[in-house]
Amino acid sequence: RGQAIALNAGGSNHAASSFYLPLQRVKRALELIQENGDTERVSRGTERVVWKHMTYDELKKLGLRPETERRMRGLGGKGLRRNTPLPPQAAQAAEMDEERDAEKHPAEDGESTEEAKEVDVAEMGHEEGNGVEKELEELEAQVDALYDGEEGLEEEYESELEDDWEEEDGDEDRINGSGGTAGVDDHPKKSGLLVVNQILPDGPATDLLDVGDILLAVRTDAAGAATNEGGGEFVDCTTFVELEATLDANVGGVVEFMVERGGVELVFSVAIESLHDLTPKTFLEAGGAVLHSLSFTQARNGHLHLDGGVYLAYAGFIFDAAGVGNHSVVTQVGSARTPTLEALEAAMQALPDA
Image (cartoon, rainbow, N blue to C red; front, side, top):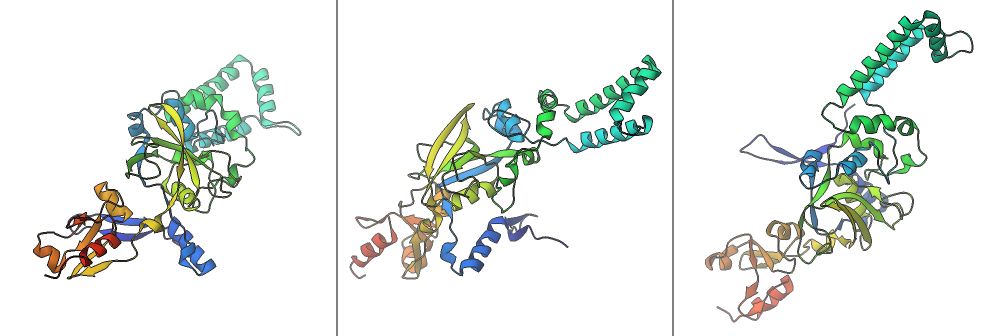
């Protein structure tokens, strides 16, 4: 049975391109509506920041430290719990090695395979011992091949294998934002991190976050928002789903962002606004023209202040005759400034007929 993972939200007539809408947050909104029967309960949060996903290779150009990369990939590091499983290829090789040992060195009652192996090696002398050493060298060569080109990762991995294989209490309580659980062991499957790409003027993050900041983790005091532990602890945030889950759960609150900027970890407290409040709900029609307040999306496209003017969705007769085309931003009518739709309506009503 298949599972739907995205909706085809659009395409291009001039290229073989399609655009898909992931369903994690759609599922969350549907469940809230089914539970409460009220769309007002579907909160949407924003800090007026546009984020971009970048791979680890690209992040190195922004100054991402090697130790930070290892930590976020789940290969160990200060401040994060480790629970890294053996890579599939190495795990398979280790399992085959154990089966081969069990066949070569059958254990007697109450004796482990390792104990039987040690007895056999001692009895067979130096020749068999050399054979075992050769097998170990071959296994080490397989591990070397797995980490070929990843300088420093093999040593880090080997030095922490015993700690990584131990299950740590509480890892399964970490939330990935889509209703499931995720720990650090998911990170090797992720190819990069989120980076600040654009900050809207006069937003909550202005003068705090900066373009190029690499997001590492978030912390919130809202119980169940970013962690089930009720806040107080930074939680890794490496995907859009995790970030959106945190923002949506903290509308009207504050979220702390841990970012790396030029190799230095910084923490900023940013207020979270409601995206619904930044979305136009009314429009004005006059002389065939259609106007409404600037939306977050249109302000982002032009890097404009949200109160920088009124958006002209359709010019109609009067604006087209004046040479003002669609998608313009009306900032002034006569001598009156029009930062909002209400201000524009009042300015147009004050104009004399004809």
